[in-house]
Length: 359
Image 1 (tube, helix red, strand yellow):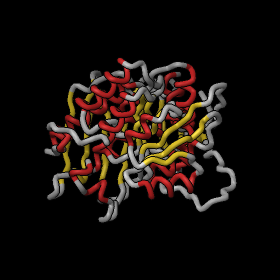
Image 2 (cartoon, helix red, strand yellow):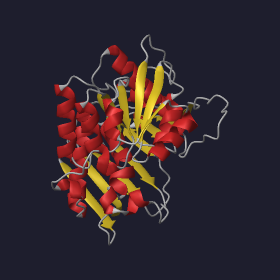
Image 3 (cartoon, helix red, strand yellow):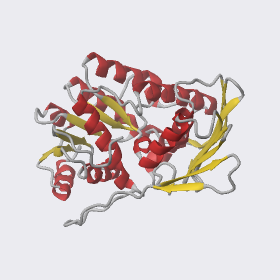
């Protein structure tokens, strides 16, 4: 599997659609990837785009997302806008013939995600939901152990993620921004269950949780029941800091992805008959000395370089989706989250036409 700085014989030119906090962190990670050239960025405000471009040394700055996507020098677009705009901005970039890496969630619902996939496939373009966790070396090693049968047949998974979000975190508390815990953080533990039971669909989904007066989900516990008495249980919360670990149970042992599981640097393996755990550490890559005031906004964000390197390598090979996080899995999770939202009574504007403008 490729490292964070996998070299390629072909360079790719990236455009950054959005200039917010996650875009800042992604650009800093992308700059560790050999062959990746960041040629343009865009925001609704030209001043914001220019400030972002100056900070990161990006030559072209636009105040129109359409202008960015029309730039012929760009090969691939990273979409890092708020949840409600992932669909229109991705559709815009694809319609202009650009490969796309779009932040998670891929879309607000399964219907829109399926439309994005259909357009990418019809145009023979790469598309991936930015589930960066899947590309951390610790997670890749965990997948290798599962595939090798090291802990036997998997029969149970528990994963959690929670933060006491501040009251000014509008992307969490505002329904019109796609707020709530499920699409922002609940998707991570769901993806771990999906990883442990690849290609399998639960026959029952049971959800218990709560919503705010504004109509966004605050917390939930979700149990997924699979054939053969196998299960996955996930918990997420916007009100409390949780331990954020993943435990995968098998017939020959257990595997623990340690905190922070969405950006892990170690895993712990316990095999039946062994008294102690085997712990394997995967240190994060080092960022070269900075000559500007740049800084990461989120913990372990330098690990975005793993995802960026994987996308860079896949597009260079001619792949149109990621083998490690395929589009079928993104669509499965989108449909699963639709089910959970229905159970919680969470409805977004995107669930009913018309959709927001992409420009």
